[in-house]
Image (cartoon, rainbow, N blue to C red; front, side):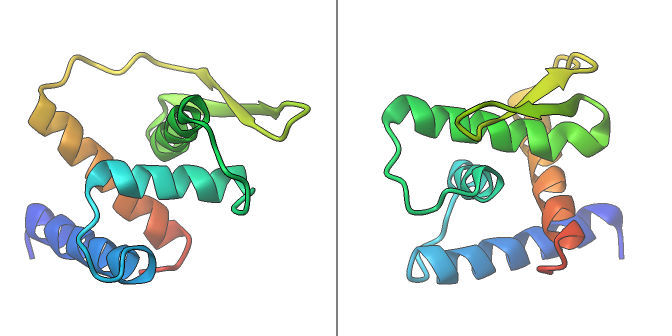
Amino acid sequence: MARDEELKKQWDEVVTLLSNQFADGDILDLDAIIYIIGLQEKGDLKKIYSKDEKLNLMHIAICRLLEPFGYYAFDYFDEEGWPHYQVLEKLPPLKAGEQSVLMKEAVVQYFVEKEVI
């Protein structure tokens, strides 16, 4: 199976799994999945987050997702338990479609690593 076909198959598996678990089967988009990963990485699932905190959760997720690609490295947890990352390498300029493919690949890799798929 070609790499693109395998990625699509695994992406669809992640979307189906998370959509059924968190959205009663309504299809989640990439941003919603990134948010869920941010919640997982923060670890405080019962807290109600402000709008700014929700954006921070997405930032955490993006850093965590791109860490295996060498763009970020975990640095420390602050006193409130928020993870912080340092930039190792700036992302290259990517078109919107390229960004989407990179993030989908990173999400799939994350869930493979977590042995969810």
